[in-house]
Length: 163
Image 1 (cartoon, helix red, strand yellow):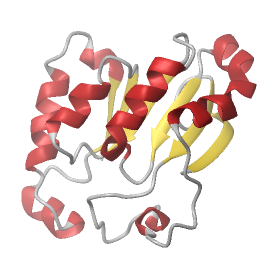
Image 2 (cartoon, rainbow, N blue to C red; image 1 turned 45 degrees about the horizontal axis):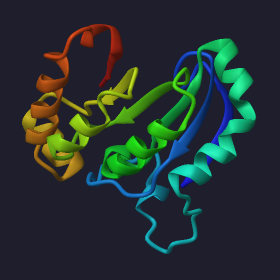
Image 3 (cartoon, helix red, strand yellow; image 1 turned 180 degrees about the vertical axis):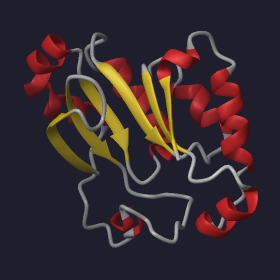
Image 4 (tube, one colour; image 1 turned 90 degrees about the horizontal axis):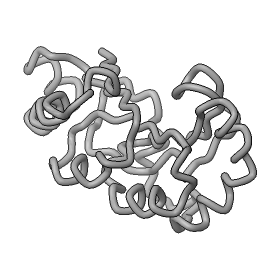
């Protein structure tokens, strides 16, 4: 996991700490974070409690600016149990944001939904052929998850789609 503190205007509202996970189901041709595919194990492994302890130093910044934690990656939804546990442990006033491709089984999204305030969704492309050529995966999971997410109350206030 990579941790980057004091991000402003990039990964959400207010002062934000980005917690980036390793691993991604996509193999995008022009991946912006190809390091997330590194399987060498040279990155930091934390428990949810250890991450809470590490980012608690910025609690006042988060509370004063309506900031918090943005989970990115790789694909953070592959770590939905970690995110769920983290959210149960952290200050409930922190804003939890998720940067995701949504290309995971729906149960991962459903598990974290009660805790996430904002979603930045990287759709890649809506054209099926282009999407599949670019990512080397079907867009079926992404579309199912996007439809489910947009059917939730107040979803339009929580979701930013990036192409």
